[in-house]
Amino acid sequence: MARYEIVVDGVVGPLVMTALEDFEVRPDRPGRSRLVGQVLDQAALHGVLNRLRDLRVEIIDVRRVEDS
Image (cartoon, one colour):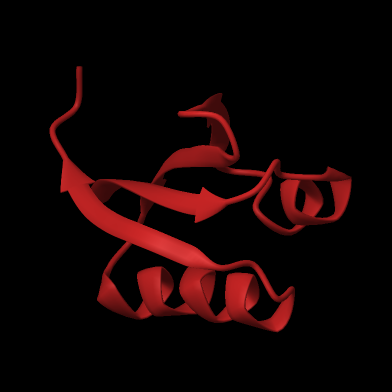
């Protein structure tokens, strides 16, 4: 398992929150949101990124983060 932070453009609405229920939504700078959560492996990460793409969410940054 690995923890990832995904920065997206805009405020995350209920549809995205439902699609990524295992991720925590954190505020970022104005007009951006951070999604933080764990994924099992690279295939699962690609699944999350594909769901965001399908929901037409613009991905700004993806990074692996250490557990805090």
